[in-house]
Amino acid sequence: MIKRLRGHSLQAEQAFQTGLAQAQTYHQQHGHLAVPKEDVPHGYPLGQWLANLRSSHIKMPAHQAAALNSIYPWWNVPWSTLWQRTWHQARDHTEAHGPLQPARGFPTTSYSLGEWLYLQCTRYPAPHPEEQRLLTQIGIDAAAAAAARPRRRNLKAGAEEALAHARSYAAEHAA
Image (cartoon, rainbow, N blue to C red):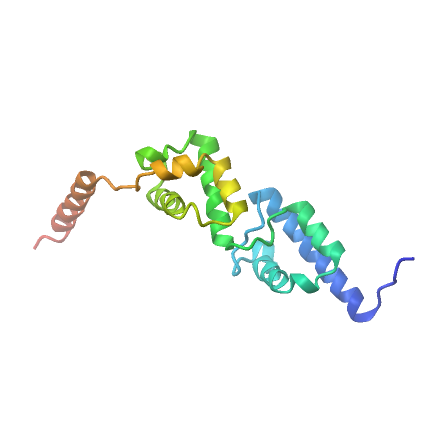
């Protein structure tokens, strides 16, 4: 026997279905549901909606949790959504540019992504087992983490860039 929803229960279910449709669209576009809390894609406060669900997931009806799990099994992970978004960035990078090369300081990555990856390596024994599994998917296992070197900026190139900016400023503002 299916319970008929009325009043507040019906409104709550309709609101959930609206959020679920927005979540499906976001997942199709981004491949995850690690939506920043302040994001309002297509005018819908999806980030806040998901944050609210994460904070009250224990009270969530089973069919709603199952619906979200079917879209993205890591919609409510025990680690931060920022970690999840950055992992997706790293995964996309490896798909586009090949293996990460931790022992060489992640040379093909942006500086910030390389720093994040190195930080994951320095903390490697501590992450949640599922985080470790996800890191392994992008080529960071215990051995790679142990061999990792920090992402370094090329100091000579940085100094040359700073000098070029200084010369440009001086030329533009010369009195």
